[in-house]
Length: 618
Image (cartoon, rainbow, N blue to C red; front, side):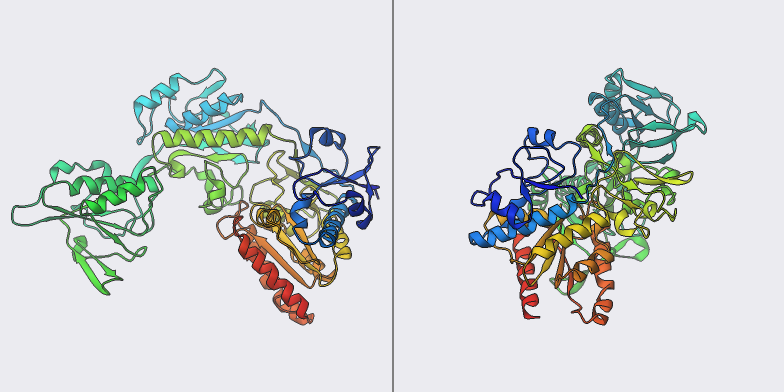
């Protein structure tokens, strides 16, 4: 085992702690500036001084945000908590793991497959980042606009393409494997010979179509928002003309579609003796000016009607609408003279995207997840933009391309990225890692597992699921984690507890509470995780075996996990162990999952307090 040293870096929250006392309590030597074999550093790698990072390059290091794990309280309490945190980190560093790394590759080539404004914007933005770009388009010319594009804007952007964009007309992407830094792409013009790319943008041209509305409407009454001419509408002298504007009655439409529907409703309401009813399942007003537009509609006399998704009934051959009004407690009916339908951008999905053996299902690849906005997908390095993503035509697509290009550039040229370590002599080729990884990093080639160089985000899903412990993200294998838990729990006083905290939700809440002086229970071991996906049943049971009376996993809310199902899998594993806990004579709630957002500090503090109270009563 490597000799461990504590390298102290002063950060806010550590001012009154004596480094020598912390090192002694943790059973380590305090660094005095000599040669190092392995180290625990009291700050994150990003916040550490450059001289410290340079000195530790190539050594086993545990970067520890010590202030976050210490928190507030009396000096003796804080000293004991610092010793537990340092000891936990030392358990990982002691294993001396040095995983392979992917060095930044500034000039990696990028493939853009598509046409129209989105594809041109992606090619332009990627080239502006210094990457050679191949723009593969199914058309004869790259200046051909999609059905929902502005032809003039497309022509202008095509004329501005940088010189490092290589054009491949009459060419389509037919197959794709790999992830960031290691994509293999098959183009229709290249036959069976794949080309290698660092990143891929998929941006086919699209069109505006009617969707998300109830079925059975009379086509003679219906017209899309884009085909509406308000001047054609005027009520009779002795009555009113009723018009229904449907803006997502089966399911919610995007905010830009809802805004277009509101603009149509407002224009119709300004016509003489025209009464407009705007029906929707959800008022999406996030687009610029959306909230004001909604108020303007109400002030102009537009009747805003919210119905449950799919609850709008269609009668009389599609000429009558009916819905239940929860305030009046009765059913309302409307026989409109015309029905205006909201539209949204869409594009034909390439056939290879529906191959579940090569690509995750669409809802997992492009989920409704705020952590995967800006063209990102769950597969690292693959960006889907424009109409296929449902992005509104125009400048919104240019903004999306710029955001995606920035994320691409960071993935390929940012900091050195550790790669998963695969022990081929342990691997049974069961393909569990291939099926499990939400980011498409591992793939089976010939007779072994190969990982895309820059694709790994160290979420730990592969390590949590691999039955042979043959694959693990860097420093997140079972040996490192077991050792870390053992060292931390050995030093923690009774009652011993563990908080596994996701880096995107739990740990920011921990850090915020500690900065406010929150006092954590003395026996609580805080264990940062990159993602709740790393939780395995074995890890949970080992924590209990090593003396923890209670274990709490703080992960993202459903729909917010950047690894898509990491939180769901953690919850399922905890739920499935309740029966085994009872058989072992342990409380069935000894393991708990806490859905958390990074700003839900009170919820985290309350959950830890309740856990400590239960542990103290047992």
